[in-house]
Image (tube, rainbow, N blue to C red):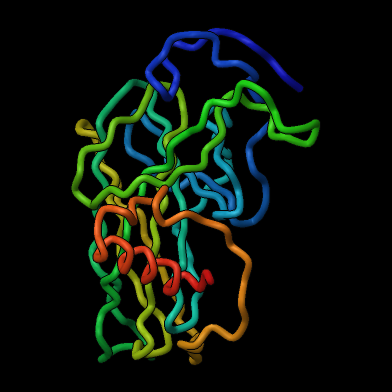
Amino acid sequence: SLATGSCSQNPDGSTTDPGAVCTDCTPTGTMVGKLPSPTGAVIWTAPTTEKLLREAAPPTNDTPAIQLYAAKNEFEPFQIAVRAAAAANVTLTMPAFAPAGAAAGGPAIDRIELRRVEYVKITQPSDASSIKSGYIPDPLLPSRFGASESVPAGQNQPFWITVYIPEGANPGDYQTTLRVDTGSSSVDIPVKLHVYNFALPRKIGFDGQWNSSFQALGGSASLAAVEKLKTFFFEHRLT
């Protein structure tokens, strides 16, 4: 069902009518849950295939940790949402994954990237199957661990975290801790990673159709910018 109404502040900073508001849009499933949370905020997670709407109610079932599974030479993302009772600035920190068990003795996994999920204002839905919300999460803006990130009051602010597992990593289990600090309170969330004993091939075995413009993505700035974009596409197996 749909509802419309006003909002104290929209993701773009405006105070105008936010448009359609989804009233039943909390993801469901075994990978959705409320994580350990600091006082005055709720931290929750859902698969990266889910779009976490700013108005979605956090799940009520508890999830004590985040569990990841990946092959070697693979990027594996996960996302969390911070829903603070009052507007705040939050800081996320996350050290390298330390090997444990069968992986012990091998190197830590330390390539971990943080991005802030932003919202796009929708004034005209594409069709009847569109998500019924005035703001849709889509852009992933680069951030860094330790940076201060603003979160609005009473709305979800998702963060996307991507881990790269090197080709030479030991198979087995790894673990680290994601700390979320709201300034007045903090919490440590266990993050576990299981690395399978095989690697994705370096060579991409098939061509894809993925239309993009290097110029629109900043490639016209320099040859180095073009090479950076090409590396990004190749690493994420986009051709």
